[in-house]
Image (cartoon, rainbow, N blue to C red; front, side):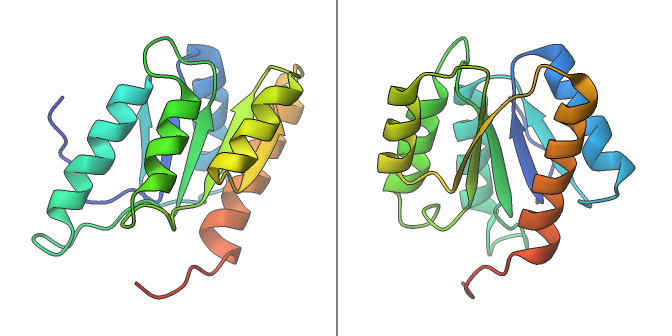
Length: 149
């Protein structure tokens, strides 16, 4: 995949088209982020982060302020993406919010062991889902202060 973005406030990693649409609408309605990048699998997420890593400094790119990550992805799993992001010095500081439909406790425990910043069960009600995404996006993009890099 060829990336044209130099930055993203939010990287949304979601393979369910309806959930992605709801999340994007919620974030755009509230004007939370200047730039939202949506990818549909873990491989694309890691590819985008790698691309930005090359571009940081060279062309004024910056890493996302937050990654919103679905755990149940078809190719590379969300847990693999989380593990990769939190194991590298240059990406460890990026907040990662896991969104999942699974109530499985083991995934929650693994996510926190790998360094997730928040673990959210996706509501089945679309209105509630949009509300939660909007609130989480607002917090991580507009309220949270990351340490200087």
